[in-house]
Image (cartoon, rainbow, N blue to C red; front, side):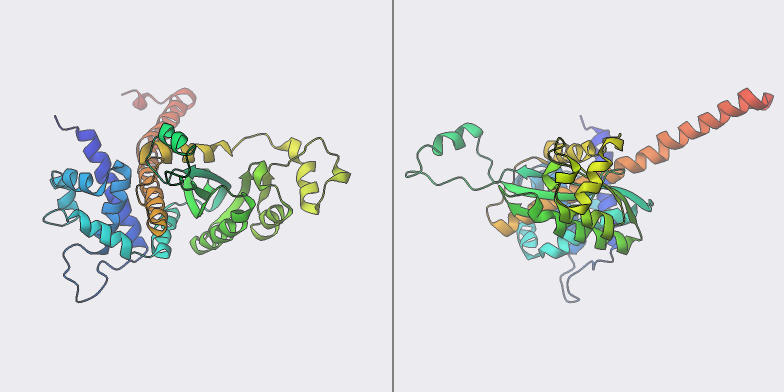
Length: 332
């Protein structure tokens, strides 16, 4: 029996990816002499949908061949061969895919954004933890397991959307990627006409440069946590770190936990492992995981504002009129 709810969810997902692509004015076809059988839009949507389903190329195409409603929405007669998607993923440039991922923030209407920065790790292999533990003991006979993939994200905490990101191989210090990611995020926010209201981060991002960038460049409230709270202020290094320590007791709400929610959702829905072996393909696969998360999150936000939020506001207004104005026509 076909689950209609899941079909609707996937169709919403595809529509939001297409809406983002159209908003960024990306060419439908890469060249005017192309065969015009699939094109850039179809390749991007299918690569993001594959990450949402967390399937291999062969399994994903087998499932797609039965989804006639999705094929009609994409205006294609049949599903492409699995090698077509593999070659398309190899052709797409990293900066181009990153631009698509960051474009989802342009679809929101908020002007003042509460931001935050954090990092998480992804597994570059699908081997079990027991297998990796066993082969690490005998390094001569078997190959060494690669380092994990470290993903640093600068996010919108209110909408729980990713603004900018940086991928590297871990383990590595958090401060290496903090400034490049925040500078990239500031550029995207400026282009979208948005402003950062505050910056939240954990103690791993406690450095004088990060505090200074949050205050001077982003013009935002500095909510980055401070190391060594017990050390007196006069012995704390850095002008901006001293200012942050003076107002640390005034910070009440903990918005930083929403970043952990984003990390958890990406790993639970799109998977915490990466199937690709090549480094460049691994980075693109992580980006398509983020695109899948962005489209899924936007579809949920749109549903919330179109149904629950508006209906609750109408009920509150009707209740107010009934209690205070005592109009009889409301009851009819």
